[in-house]
Amino acid sequence: MTVLGPPSGDVPASGTAAWRRVLSACALGIRAAPLPLSLYLVLTLAGAALPVLAAWLTKLLLDGLAAGTGSGPALRAGAGLAAVGLLAGLLPPVTGYLRGELDRAVGLLAQDRLFTSVAGFAGLARFEDPVFLDRLRLAEQAGRLTPNQTIEGLVGALRAVVTVAGFLGSLFTLSPTMTLLVLACAVPSLLAETVLARRRARVYWEIGPAERREIFYSTLLSTVAAAKEVRLFAIGDFLRGRMLADRRTADAARRRMDRGEAVVQAGLMVLAALVTAGGLIWAVSAAAGGVLTLGDVTIFVAAVAGVQGSLTSLTGEVARTHHALLMFDHYLAVTGAGPDLPAPAEPRSMPALRHGIELHDVWFRYSGGHPWVLRGVTLHIPCGGSLALVGLNGAGKSTLVKLLCRFYDPTRGSIRWDGVDIRDVDVAELRRRIGAVFQDYMCYDMSAAENIGVGDLSALDDPPRLRAAARLAGIDERISALPHGYRTLLSRDFADEPDGDGSAAGVLLSGGQWQRLALARAFLRDRRDLLILDEPSAGLDAAAEHEIHRALRRHRQGRTSVLISHRLNTVRGADHIVVLADGVIAEQGRHDELMAAGGRYATLFSLQADGYLTDSPPALPADR
Ligand SMILES: Nc1ncnc2c1ncn2[C@@H]1O[C@H](COP(=O)(O)OP(=O)(O)OP(=O)(O)O)[C@@H](O)[C@H]1O
Image 1 (cartoon, rainbow, N blue to C red):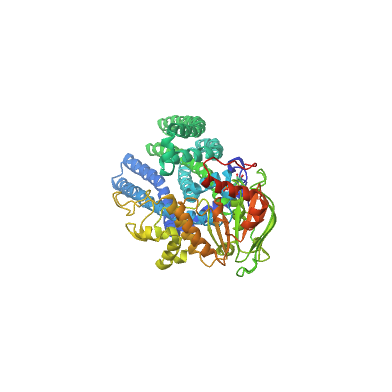
Image 2 (tube, rainbow, N blue to C red):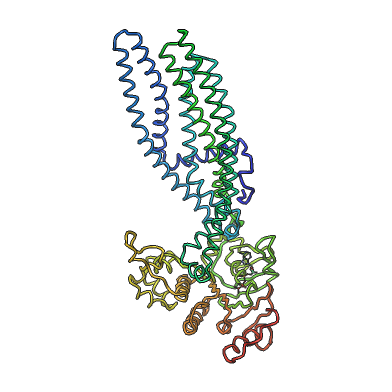
């Protein structure tokens, strides 16, 4: 199943698909909270019979009083009415509590399943697909709400059926014509509500991108990450304008939808009122002619109101459930999406790297609509050797290491790990063999220990291991000096103590210190077969860079590593240097060989070296 298909609001639901959705939603409810669900069902259906019972008891009471045959029957009917009233008062809080329990349990299970699926996507492409992101947002909402809305809808429909059946029976004994008329009124109402539900689902889908953009702008306006630029460039009004424009776009669509619904529903109400008025005129004339008793008129009025009320709520429930099920399609699409990268039926084993990793004629582009980023790269990364990737911005260096981690598959060609295509091994196993610092590493709003420990969760409760990694990255002293040492929260967004007054907020590190933490995270993944370092020292001061690269050189000794850096002094010690230009290997060799060749590498290296030694700005290379 693909999750990137057309919006489900545009796709008419087939009967089977609709039933599959109903069953999936109910299964989720049953799985999440069987006991509250059963109690809720029983009590709600019991509550549905109460209005019919009350109407008959009222009729008995009135007829008893009118007959003048003693107060016994009227008193019994009155006592019955009191009991029904008590039950009617007690049921709502109890069912309300059960409903809350059901909401919480289903929400938890649905969220768990949704994010288990999302975490199971091995690649990155879906997270870069706006259609998928729209679907994911709706799936989150639908997963939380739909199962309960469906159960509620089904229960509500059943409740309405019970009430309608009771009142219809009563009405039929008094006026079969009126019964048919009231029933006939429900048909257009049901049809109209179903159409409105489909339209609502389509509108929600259509306004999804505007709503996501609105969230994007409001996040920019309210988070510290963007606060500096927003203030310095004075773009607050500009962003607010865009945020409001997106909101107005979404609101306009919602307004059109609400207007249409209001007109249709008003029309249906007028129809129902006309039928009720006609019925009343008939009942009053019949009572005046002695055909109906006072009690009969009471039950007639109660029956017409009851049937109409229940039919209205029945159509409402059907429409709401229909809408919820259309939205649930997004949840089912995401949870049933299947692997985004082909998984081998029988993964090949992956012993420790012995010979090396080979890229064989690798071509890659991010999608059919994107230009080629890598164009026929063939490369050997020998086991135990260090490879440096250099090249201008956009040359394809980070893309190449993303392919090594199998975040994407090559569009053509293959990557072989000791001769085994990495598509033929379990992707989780492949990644267990890799340690990495990415150019856009994460800064987690967690404690310092956790920020390092996420590199290898088995070390989370092993302070000596965390400290050893931090020491290697040159950040141990700084962390130890924090208010709570390694337990200090590295965030100003959350309080260190949940109930604190804000004075216990965590601390923020400097850019270079964060980068050292990211390095420590990679060092924690010691004894991995491949170490990837994508610009590991970009944010470091000169002394720190020198020190870190000395540590890195020691650490990489005898390990297979790929280093990307624009600071060419840091790559000169690599066993092999590859210069990428426009997705192809322009040159390769050792530092001395490349300098002697006098090509791009030599030009770039000399440029950087000159930049430090001369006053005049150096000339840029020709392909810049
Ligand atoms: N997720 C993506 N989707 C589409 N295009 C992308 C994506 N990531 C990178 N690109 C494009 O691929 C090309 C290579 O990007 P890449 O990040 O690999 O370059 P790089 O050599 O690492 O550059 P830099 O030195 O600036 O980090 C660029 O033109 C970029 O626009």
